[in-house]
Every structure is written in structure tokens, then in C-alpha cells.
Length: 141
Length: 496
Image 1 (cartoon, chains in turn green, purple):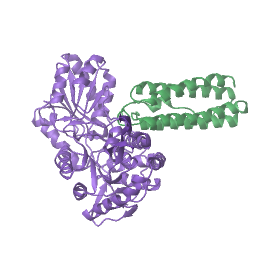
Image 2 (tube, helix red, strand yellow; image 1 turned 180 degrees about the horizontal axis):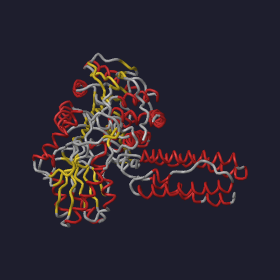
Image 3 (cartoon, helix red, strand yellow; image 1 turned 135 degrees about the vertical axis):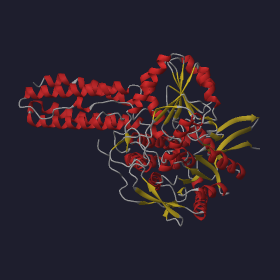
Image 4 (cartoon, chains in turn brown, cyan; image 1 turned 30 degrees about the vertical axis):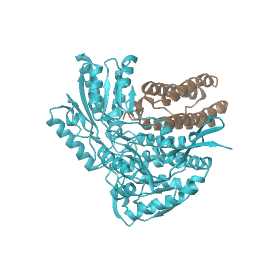
């Protein structure tokens, strides 16, 4: 079902971040070579949750279009969190996760631009930060 | 999507909060019903005259000490309250959805708005400073001391049960007054929770009182010589004919914020997609139950293609609105507050048809997300070809009904908006600064939106209103509230 309300999009973003954080924690245990990077990413994911929740809870009001600012199809942003069998596969998988999440935040920000006040800005910042992860991931391979 | 957990799991027996104690009322008890699932979630008393008298007496007794409490110390209690409200943000929001029916985004928005007023009230040591002129004559100084007045009554409506008393309470309290709040008896649970948190914050007994009920409590407030002023939000007939008149007769200060019929002017140069998103919130948010909801969409210009395409898009977007229980995060529009309110809106839809308006979307046929009785649910309705002087085009419906009108020029749009009796929250959607300024200058409306569909002023601005939408002089919120809750004591001093 399409997500239209800010509340449902925030919940979905939280779920994506939690799932990907657990995914990175799993990789950290499995691949010591990238342990620190994976743990840092997991930690940063939870900071992202705080970041967009702060934006949402700080500006949500009846003057903005909270219930009508999005049209997100959650099926387009499904992530595979079953760790791959080798480190190279795991890195590729992590890059895909990042790509999906960047796409999610970019799409959500675009849809709610000028409707949801600080929320699209938080989403854009998170997408930007995530795009810097790929280089770190490639160095583990 | 899953339905969020309900904070109220069993029937809550609502009590009055008088002199720092939770006391049972001797009045009749009525049910508080969740309009989405029709389950009883509380029982509220319709309190007696003796009970409102007891609350006022307690407030009067508490006032001298509270007045002497320094503004800084009073603000510290508000700071504690603010912290508690943040800690309980989600619970308070979900209670609003349970008792009122609004969507969770809307309830959270209401909670945030209420907290913002507490935050502004926290700045009272600066906000209530007076002013001084040295040497108005040689050796003589003159200054103003804003002083509190005593006990104020705050009468809340059903549509924003938690937030609206907070348009007044933090200002009244921080300036050194005591309060008696009468919540709407339909939705008293979030006010009960607010009073519990106020008690925890440390307001001394008698400073913050809550008396639940109806007309008897309101009359008790209006007639009581111990109440120096009233703030009221509700319908125009009650605000104008009861609250404003009786406050005048008994010498009370008054802020009476009343009904509305808001016109949204849509210029052909507007950003169509964003205008339509804003229209959804403005016409159908809170199920149309707010004094800032747009009611009439006035489409300007003689471009038939623009008009046709715009209306088609509005219908398409409106048809897709998800209706259901507000605790379901996917839901965009909840039920009306109760069955009688739904019937009132239904009667307006019938009237619109009889008046010859074209029914483009019939909200009487409603698809509900989830398994809920349709008792209070109504879908969004769109009429086209509505005359501004018809009942549907001129009276406050207070429900999810959009009336489309078409005019040739901006001047005409302003003219029909100004011809209406109300003046609360008119708005314009345009990309022309010139048109926006002309609209802002000529429209008679207390709150004006330029590419904003719900013109809800921030806590540090007054919540304004004009014509039949407002009775009084000063408004709630911000600096005007500080003025309302204080008297200017002017001192001229000379020392020999």
C-alpha cells in the first residue's frame, strides 16, 4: 500500500534504518576486516533515525501537509539483509542497500519539498551522507 | 499498516481537578466515545454550579501567593511542564486521536502547537516587562507595570481538545493569574492528562483547575464575580450572543474566537501540484472540523481548460484520500467527532443539492480502511457551481465539504470573500507577488495565507480573526495574550 502520510513514511524510514543497522552489525561479526566500518555505519543509522525524527516531531503541525505530502511505494525500497557468503558479495550487497536508501530519501524529499518543512531537508542530508559510504565500503572488498 | 497502540485501554473515569486534588463530581455522568470504533473510552461528569464555584474559590485563594511568586519561578514550573509534555508527547497525541478521531499526524501537530505556547510562556520574565520614561517633567518619572488580574476561565472546544486551552493557559499562568479550564465534555481526556502533567510540574494547589461539564459550568464562569476574564473558542452564536455579551454585562475581559467560512482563492498561475496538496490538508484535514479549514475554492480566470484540468485533478486526488481510524498511520482523514456532527454535515450536502450545486464527489458513499462502523465517518464531498450567497456557500459546515466557485478576476474573488460574514483564514495560491499583495491588502480576514492553506499562527503571533469570527480586542497567543492577561498599572513618581 502506498504511503501518503508523514507518520507512515517516518515509520518506514525508521524500519529501513533499523533493518540496515542490523544488517551491518551482522556483517561486522562475519567479516572482521570491515568490522569497524560496519559498526560505524550501524551506529550512524541510528543517528539518522534521531535526525529525521527530530525534524518531524519538531515541525509537524496542521499548517503543513502532513497527511498529504508523500506517495511512497514501499515495495520499491525493499532491502536484502541476508548477508552474502563472502566479503566481496557482502560489500556489493551493502552498496545496493545504500543505493536503495539514497533513492528512498531522495524520492521522499522531492515529494515533500516545500510541503513538509524541515523533513525533506533532513532526508536530503541523510542521502548526501550515505552517498559517502560507498567509497568506504569499496575499500573493504 | 498496523494500528498504533491505544494509550487508553480501559474506561477512564474523569474527575475535576480543584485546588490540587482530583475530585469526583456530583453531576450527571456521560460517556466519552471514540468516534472511529464507537467504543466508550471514558466517563465525564457534567459538573454542578457548586463545583465551578469551588474551583473559582480555590483559584482566588491561591492567587495572592501565585502573584507574589516571581515571574522567573513561575516560568521554571512552565519549563518543567514543557519537559513533561515532550516526554509524554506520543501518549498525549494518541489520546487526542482516540477521543477526537483525528489522524495521528494531526494529533502530533496539535501537541507540538500546544507545547510551543508553553515555550513562549517560559519567556515571560522578559515578555511581561514594563517600560519607563525618565523625566516626563523635571524630576518626575513615569512607568508601566503589567500586573496580573486574578482568575481567568478558559473554555475549550471539541475540535482541538488539547491545544486550544494552551493558547491561553501558559500566558495566564506565567503572568501570575490562576485558571479554571472547562474542556469540551465530548473530548475531556487529553485535558485530564494535561492537568496531571501540570500537577507533576509543580503548580501550587488552586493555580490550575479543571472543571468538566457543559452549560452550567460556562454559566457559572460567566456569572461569577471572581472570574475576571474568559477565553472561549467555539461557535459564533455562542461566542457572540452568550460569551461576549455576558462578559460585557459582568465586566469581564473576553476573547471569543468563533466560526469561519474560509475562501481559498486559486489563481491560474499557481503551482498546481502543491496547491492541490495544500487543498487536501486545508479542506479535509481534521475532517474539516476547524476554524481555519478552507470551505470555498474560488478559481479565478476565464481559461476553461485550466479550470477543467484543475477541478479534475482535485477530484482525483480527493477520491484517493484514505479514510479510517486515525491511529492507523496510513489514514489521511478520520471520522467526524460524533454522529450528530455527521448528520449536520449530511444535511448541508442535501441542502447543496437542493440549492442546485453540482455534486462532483459524494462523500455519503464512504470506503473505510479497516473494519470500523460507519457511524461517524463521512467521505469528502465536492460541489461545483456553488453560489457565494447560498447556504452551502456562506454558512459554516464544519465538515469535509469543498464548494467550488468560479470568478473572472482577483477583485471579484476578494469581493465575494469579503461579502461573507466571517473573516478568519482566507488564502490565495499564486506565483504573482503583485496578486498576493493585492489580496493581502484588500482581504478582510484575521489570518491570511499566501500559498498556505491552513493559516495557523505560530505561538509567538496572535491567533487573529475578524468580523463574525472574533469578538474582543486582544487575541490569544504571543504578545497579545500577555496584554490580555495583564493590566497596565501606570506609575508617575516624584521624590521630594
